Image 1: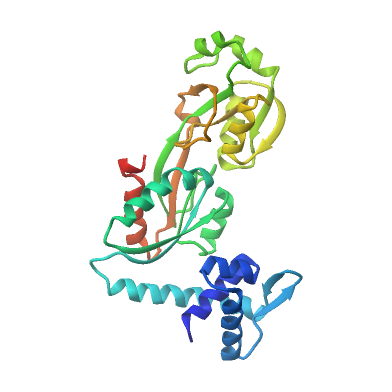
Image 2: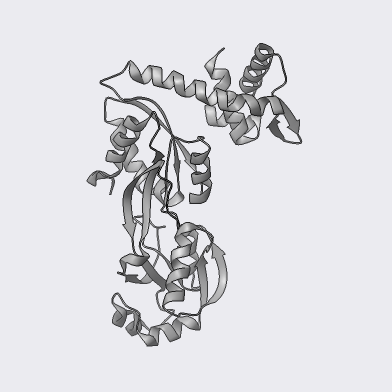
Amino acid sequence: MNSNFLRSLIALSQEGSIVRAAQSQGLTPTAISQRIKALEEQVGCCLTIRSGKTVQLTEAGQRILPHARQLIRAEQNLINGLNQDRISGQLELGVISTAMTGMIPGALNLLQNESHDLDVKLHPGTSKQLYNRLLSDDLDAIIISAPPFSLPKEFKVGVITQEPLCFISAKGSLPEHLWQKAGTKLPPELIIELRQKPFIRYDHRAWGGKLVTQFLRDHKISVHDFCELDALEAITVLVNSDLGFALIPDWQGPWPEGLDLNKVTIKDTRYYRKTILLRKISTAKETAISYFEKLLNSPQTR
């Protein structure tokens, strides 16, 4: 059985359409369709079914899926075992948006300069989405915000960054002397002014957003919500347009260009957002993951 056919079936199950599965594999939709048809002929049953513009796996397709993943992992383990001096293979890595534009480009640049043959495939998503995909073995490792709960013992955690919260507001939207007086702590006068302005909330359902909610609750700061987003870059743009103020993690960057903001950074480690690299202890790709973790922690990626 051709392992590439199994890879296309897995891609189709993840993407939900032949077009997107083809894009994820760098193939044409026709090639994906041909692979699935050939696989169905080999196993002797229908594995997919169309529903409008989407394609779903049949019951037989769902049954074969975990075995397909197991075979792909076994094939990769075989290849890795033959390359003792080089790190090779493919690493399926889930990444939240701020890490995707921040630390990932630098790490990939370092990877290109190395002699290893490691192919890193990036999967964007929220922390919760990526965590669920890691649980189901869809991904080898994920870079996410630390969850608001204790992780099971089956996971290995590497802390990549620790980011303090910061209040931001458009320049000129509030008296400048209040921001200058703030330092790393909000004076009562500034809190009063902030209460009168709309609040652009970092989504309370996001794991990083829960820190914001906790900080406001602990410090008894009431706010008037204007909107709620799980996209830090978008929040800074809205704040820069003087549509309100926000409390967000002071992430590594890059931040959107052209911003002119006042910022007060809260130096209280209880509310730091941790960005972590998470994988299962039992993963067969620990060597590749640990190697990529070193690249992420290199000063050249900061």
